[in-house]
Each structure stands twice: as structure tokens, then as C-alpha cells.
Image (cartoon, rainbow, N blue to C red):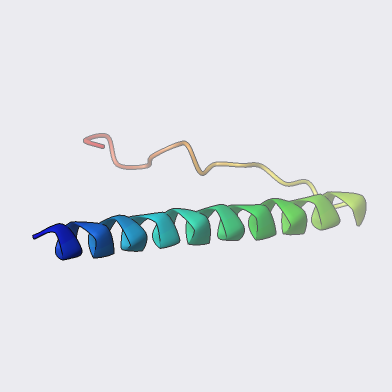
Amino acid sequence: MGKRKTQWKKKVKDEKELVKAKESEFYELVDWLEKWGYKVTDRTKKSKIEEI
């Protein structure tokens, strides 16, 4: 079971790093759009579904 737990932790770590990388790319894109004069509204924290 120890090997599975280690593999699971590595997978979770890799997924967290992937999310951080994607967020960084997203905010870089937002920054460029704002520099080019576009109005950008971050709605990633708002849910359109009331149950969530």
C-alpha cells in the first residue's frame, strides 16, 4: 500500500503544479488583453449555478 500512496501523492502534486501553470498562463493572457485595451472581468470565483 505504501507504493500506491506515494504514486497518489505524486499524481496530486503534479496536478497541483499543472493547475498553477495554467493559472499563470491565464493571468498572463489577461494582462496582455488589458494592455491591448480590452476590459477583462474575472468571473472564475462566481458560480452561475445557485446550488454550488
